[in-house]
Amino acid sequence: MKGKRQPGIERVKDILPKSIHALGPAVEQRYLREYVVAHWETIVGKMIATSVEAVRILRDVLWLYSPDAVWRNQIKMMETDICQRVNNFAGGRLVRELRFARSGRGRQAIEAAPVEAEENGLFSLPEERLARQVQQADLKEEEIAQARAACAGVEDDELRARLFRLTLGRWKLQHVKEAHGYHRCADCSALCPPGAKRCGACAAKHEAELRAACTRLLREVPWMRYGEVKKSLPEATPALLARCRVSLIQSLASRVLLKDYASMEAKTLTMLFRCLPPEQLTEDLVKRTLYYLRGNLAKPEDWQPLRRYDYISWGRKKAGERRVPTSRQKRVRQDR
Figure 1 (cartoon, rainbow, N blue to C red):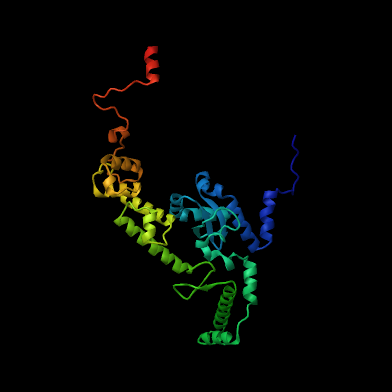
Figure 2: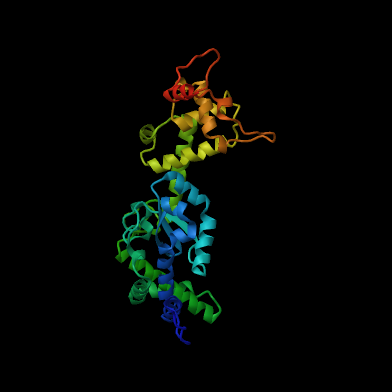
């Protein structure tokens, strides 16, 4: 028989959050980041957690990993909803953006992802250590004089002093970055992390240009595969090609009707989906493709769902055709 709980005794799950909160905001934030990653399945559900795993939270960014390009595209479409779920679970604004790493779960996942190099090097350090290095950085007298001259035009004394401190802090951070191997961006003069050719803004712009070029190639030659795209765009990746192909398929499917299998858009959709040249297309193949994508196709107001055999002759007995009865049919006839 269980005894009565003694008054004044608290459970561990109630004491732990209070103890962490008492250690300060930095420790509490670190605990919340680990807590969210550990309870990723509880936040998004088992179906998403099976295909997409949470890696780490760094500077308001939740890093995820998924080898499936379709799931990555789906998660980006749900970005606002997932960020809201994570923040609600953490009890405050913890993340504001989702990004995908190239390696899976582990402490070194972000460092092992070269395409996500902006989180490497300096920003992989703990925040306390980074702040200490910025504080201890030395500036030359010429730089201090230049910062003071840049703020001399501000009339308000308090505002001028704050602006002067911010300017010094920015230059100290720049020196710390250079000490950690940061270099100038290939497209602009901003500092970018070691292992990255471009800064974050230029990398995003370059990726958008690559995606636009890849999309143009697929619109001109819908059946192109990765080897052919690679010849025209050496920097293209299989993931980039998959994202462009999925985007075009979704765009075309929203305009194609199930019964319009003879239209040019339906044939282009089939070539995109099957990666087949036009000489290999048949009416049956187009109809099968549209039926497979029927959930994403456009639907008129009087649309009614079709049965498979009413649309495609899959195994349907033709007029006058005689078939050999199966062994099960023979047993049924003998029992009768």
